[in-house]
Image 1 (cartoon, rainbow, N blue to C red):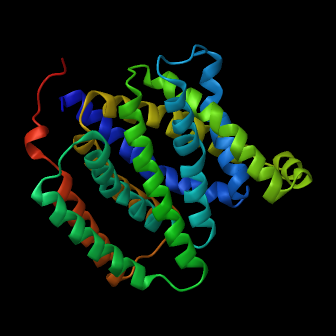
Image 2: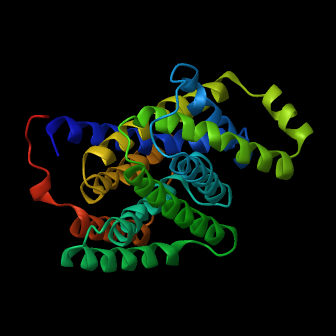
Length: 292
């Protein structure tokens, strides 16, 4: 990867780590489906400027709309709603690196190295350690929702590669426009029409700012840049940079939300990060060279 691509990857992952603080704050004002809907509405706003569809078969755009535009964030928010702490959710979500590696092998013929198999095994041990610290009931449900969100993110990474278009900003914007409809329907069914309008009418200006940040900056901007990096580099070279997300997320939630992490959970987090780093980072692919 070039120097500029490395800088972009670091910027996006730090931004996404901080976004967990904003998500937790907004969940205090909006229920999960409505929050996810407002996020994709904000993320789809640039379509007013980027009106033309990207040059890619429509089924790839539809699949990206379902995964990245709708399901991924809904699952993550449900995980947090069911008791998953924001900082811990940021960490568990990074199992998407493992899922991306597996899907890239199955669908893109990117053959994993022996170190990747070892890294996956190490990370699974770390996940088991973390799971042992999560109380039963709602928190365990939240844990599995976040795992499903990670699998969905991995799927969207592969879809971006298969879509075969360099118009990634159009791709991301249109994907989130398509994501509005299923999320709005789910919000209407499970959260109620009258309740939706009542909640939105009472939304604070801080809540509006949270939506703009999550939708326009973190989602449209962040996923646009991430998808660009996925298109220009191999999936296995880009995905490991998401290791920065839990570090940024845990620091942000500790400083701003007062989240505490016990020694066992910190140890589990360390094992996961070691496994992900050992199994996925290709140092030979990260030579510092000028962008072409």
